Length: 434
Ligand code: FDA
Ligand code: NAD
Image (cartoon, rainbow, N blue to C red):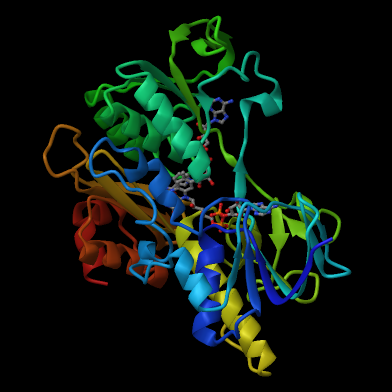
């Protein structure tokens, strides 16, 4: 039996693992002290590329182009980087058992990895339609997107079903980004989701109306208020039809499902405290078990700004939480402390020639400002969220870097407002003067 020992082990090889490795190197690790164990076959990369340029017909992104840490403007960590720094990058290795009491991990192949300090960075997995028994959901070409292998399957399907028909199930991030990517590949796209408008966990009805109109103009057919309840397949087992709850039947050569993610915490069930579906941490990403940290999608952490415990499934937090945890680990070794994590939520998305950013919290009253007319050339519009007389969240489509900085500042500063009509009229100018 192979047994290896490391001072630090990062389990998971995604965004937060890559940013954690870079921070360990910055803070100083000796050769052989750090291992990154990933079930993926490639070194950590910027996952957001998979639903965007990886699928584009032109200007296509491929590895090694988008390894971390290019997403935040940093140096690209190629597989050689880990070698040069004496960091063991252990790929194609799924951990199937974790014993936090004896500080050991076991891989599917039976290797044992011992650690002194563990960083859990296992991210999320997709929720599958087969998880809730949707009839026929195991047919070929019903695809999901989380890892690069999934993206490769999508690329294959797009090639094989040239000018074919796709049904996108789900109206969230994956739904919106994949509808656009497939449409750009000249696929006939229909989107199906149960809610009255797309991306309801963030968008207001006003924001969603713009994107739905824009997508419709690009030829995406939107079917709201219903769900896929079954699929039929052809003689090869490939999906042919999507049956909807409202009785409609849609033809499909490809189905892409984006009905949400689930944090990968099962390895640690019963061994560590959990909350809100994730692994509970303090403001330094320390879990309830000594020497065990959790970062990225799996961490449920104190969000100081809102005095609440939350989990965040976005890349900016994956990067920042990883860096913060490593700084805290290194500081505690030197008997020092660092400031508590003080996170301002930041989400973004891009599709077609659109690009939005959101900062802060999306609760309270809202105002829509700017030009949200689908047919106008600028598309510069946004929204503020107002709670207890203060602006606490801001959304902006097609902002310049300066304008995006301004809305981030508004969400952080939380300036008071008393007249919402005036705020609507002022729009972006309100943020720019803060
Ligand atoms: P991440 O999922 O990146 O990495 C987890 C890693 O752990 C994977 O390598 C996995 O294989 C590995 N792993 C899991 N279990 C394991 C085990 N038992 N043994 C070994 N390895 C294991 N966010 C955003 O803000 N803007 C955006 O545009 C996008 N776009 C986007 C597109 C797509 C397609 C996805 C799937 C997600 C996004 N996101 C995003 C979300 C963002 O990518 C996500 O929040 C981060 O990748 C989370 O980083 P983590 O490191 O926590 O998980
Ligand atoms: P999501 O939570 O954004 O959206 C899920 C959507 O699924 C819901 O909005 C709803 O419309 C739909 N839905 C739920 N049940 C359904 C059903 N039975 N039938 C049809 N539709 C149903 O999740 P996602 O889009 O799958 O994204 C997965 C993960 O990837 C999330 O963690 C997300 O944050 C991340 N991601 C983020 C970005 C980004 O930040 N730009 C991009 C891609 C993925």
